[in-house]
Image 1 (cartoon, rainbow, N blue to C red):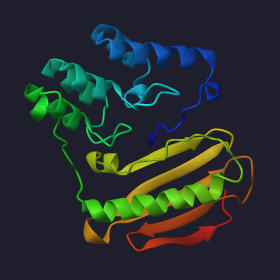
Image 2: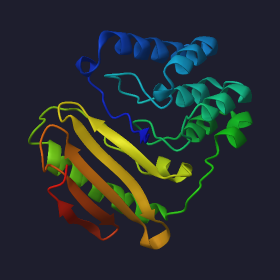
Image 3: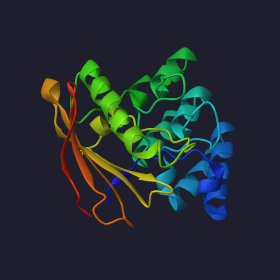
Length: 219
């Protein structure tokens, strides 16, 4: 199963039980109630990189731990549970940036990103921009007001298998995307489809030079 990019931000896209769990997690992380945080994450490991629904800061539990200056044991455990060190808040800060801004230098080693793959930052940002254009071309007309948080690509570099799934409510499908090459010639392969529509599939190859539709009509 692919790791999921959690891009849903609207409250009404979740069932009540899941919504309540996410609210409890966001509240526990903000108040540095780490036993409660870990209890919820053990039940819902898919929330390791989630932020408060309809919130503005986009703080994940790891961002909150960095802000609070939590013990190293806490941040290490969050990382072990799947928290990404490279995911950004709404200001573009990673957890390590927050910790250093707050003077929590004891977290520097724990929060320093450990990358399994290398893509130059400028190359990755150009690929990400083109990927977002591909996503918008598919969903903005069909899902106005979706409020989705589009995927950041840097967390892919933390994964041994650099692939994620971006589910899109209302589409009954979404985007599966993976790094197919790294370095300056990095290439992202993105496949999208709607499960209730035969032939809805599209496959794009995306590089720093832009995107190219290479296949369609599957699924």
